[in-house]
Length: 489
Image 1 (cartoon, rainbow, N blue to C red):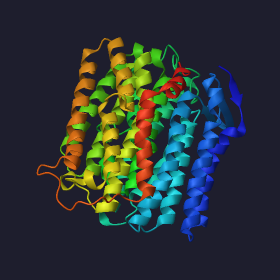
Image 2: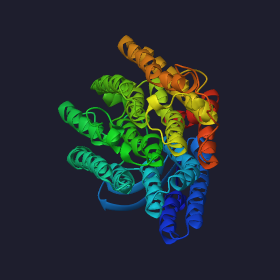
Image 3: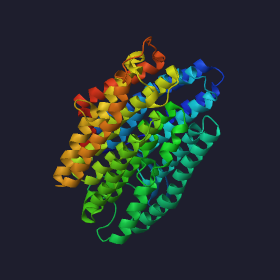
Image 4: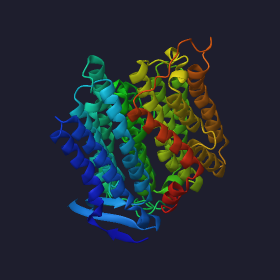
């Protein structure tokens, strides 16, 4: 592995930040403002893509910005794991940009300038998390995401939005201040650094580190990143469903929750390391905590008639797959966990895009009200069906690849219990997704007479159909993502 020190790492970070500024400056001209968003997203993705060749060769980009204290640095670092998250975030920002135009105009939403500016700022924070080379850098960008998304959650500015956004920011701020900050202090006292290790094997803790201390710090870190929505720190996520659907898609598929599971994965692998987690049996404990979240999230999803609420609990469950995979600490388990970051992103953003399209075109929020809607919105519901298959884990859609590696990882660990959890969760996934598809295309009394084709704006339908198609593409050809994960090992 060769480290390449370069200021190029600032370009993908500065572009979304500058886009947020441009959104504010051009706020009085909607066409120009929206063009700025799309342009910023495209340029950001190109800048991220430019880092790909060297990373695939096994090299790492770094940029040391400044030192606050000995061992306490603000540093950027880009490896395969970074590009796995940054590439998906920047690419889906492009499609989300077009989708936002159709949604915000279709519902004549207010405060659109604030919305677009905060959306861009959130991507800035997410890319900062992906590019973080130290725990402190990660923490700072993690908080940027929290602050930038707060106005998005309370966008509608009614009592429900204020209550949901208050719970959202309270959960995230309290956990980061009361759990993450003490964890970082304890890590620094015992290691003399907050930098990430260069590989996933050894971490930064000395071999003589106290088992009790490491265990305490570990769980402070795991639960401190509450954006991952591991139970019992999950309740903020369903409450955040008061936000507009493009925000829900951003929260659940791309930036916010993925910032949480990415942070946990980064800290597990590059702060604690595989050897220490195996030696102290912390991996298997985390795997069973994640398993509880997987099963309970799915069971709660079964009880929800509101489509966005069902998708919210599905997200809680699906995020835990990522934590479960990494906590297996086997090659296949880590691969399955990390590859679920992009695989879940493509599928879940499709599902939320579809929910928004249904709302804009027909004003429907509850699944029970969607009988026969597949005849009115065939493209939207076909895309919804494909994304649902991915969530269930049916080949050849992307989710199957994730669950295959997770199952192999569980077998490498010789854990029948975890394998049963994976199989049971797939059945539960089918239990809450299949009825939606059946309601849409096979209503109890047959399709009502007079149903007419009535899709949402092409600005909305085309992006969701692209993301659904990509769920199949990355399911059949997962090679790029697998290579990015392989260079970490």
